Amino acid sequence: MNRRHFLAALGALALPLPAIAGMPQRTLLAAAADRSGPFFESVGGVPLRLPTRGHGMLPIPGSTELILVARRAGFWLARIDWKSGQLIKQIAAAPDRHFFGHAILSPDGATLYTTENDIATGHGLVGIYDAATLTRRGEFSSHGVGPHELLWLEPGKTLAVANGGILTLPESGRIKLNLDRMEPSVVLLDMPSGNKLAEHVLPDRTLSLRHLARTADGALGIAIQAESPDGREITDAPLLAILKDGRLQLAEAVPGLGGYAASVAALGNVFIASALQGNALALWGSDGKALGQIGVQRPAGIAIDGARAYVSNEMGVIAELDLAARKLTPLITRSGVKWDNHLQLV
Image 1 (spheres, helix red, strand yellow):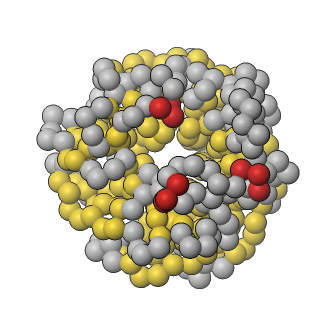
Image 2: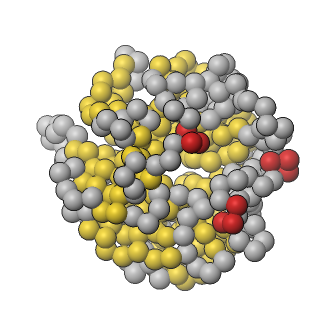
C-alpha cells in the first residue's frame, strides 16, 4: 500500500516486553495507524482518542506519563498517562505556530522544548514550555527551516536540532513548498540561551535531515529523507549523515534502498536506520562505514534497550532484533495496524 495514500490516523499502543531477571519490566510505546481514527491505547486498556495523528513520544522519567506531539503540521501536544490511557492535559499550538512532531526535556525535567514553525515567515523555532503545566514560556530560533528532532549533545548546555529544510504551511497541508531551494542543516545551540554555536550543511541540499541518534563514542547520526525537486522517483539516495569531530559527512552508500530513512537508532557504536522503501534495516559503524543490511518489510520505528533492539514495520509487526545474529524475532502482529516511524522504550 502506498504510504502517502494510506488514509489512516495515528495513535499509540503500549507493549509490555518479557521480563528479564534482575531488570525492571520494560514497555514499548508505538505510534500506530488504522482506519478507525486517531487513538492512544495501552494493551488491554481503553483507547484514548486523539484529534489528529501523533508522532514523537517523550516519556517523563520516574512516572507513567509521556508527552505526545502532533505530527507536522500539528496543532496540539498532550501529556498522557500511557499506563492508564488517561489524558492529563492537552494544549493547542500558540497563535501563528505549529508543531513539527518532536520535543525534548531539560535535564532537570522542568522545561520542555519543542520544534515549531513560524507560520507567517516559515522560520523554524524552538518553543519553551513548563513541562508539568504545558504553559508556554517563550521561544527562540532553530536557525533554519523545518526543524524536526532535538537531541542533547551535552545535557543542559549543547542541543542539536535537525532542520529538515522543507517549508510547509497549514493551508497547504504536507505539500512541500520549497523543494527547489531547500535549506537542511544540523545546528548546535548553546543552552539555555538558544544562541547558535555551529551550523553544518551537506553539499546536496535535496537531502532533508530529520531524525537523530548518537553512538557510544559520541558520533551523531542524522537520518535522511531525500527529496526530488523535479518529481522523478528516488530509487537510490544517501540514508545517513554523521556529525563527528566537527564535520558533517555522508555515511557510505548502501545501494538499492531508496531514499527514505524512517528512523535511526544507535546500538553501541552501530547506527541502525530503517530503510522504509528498501525493505531493510541499514547498518553503519560510527565512522560511517557500511556494515550491511537486514531484510524486513516496510521497517519503521527502532528502540534500543541496552544490547537489544526492537523494530516495528508498517505491516503490524513489532520484532526483537539480535544484531549479532542479524535475526528478527516477531513479538506481536496487529492485523490492520501500521506502526509509525517511532518506537519508545520505558
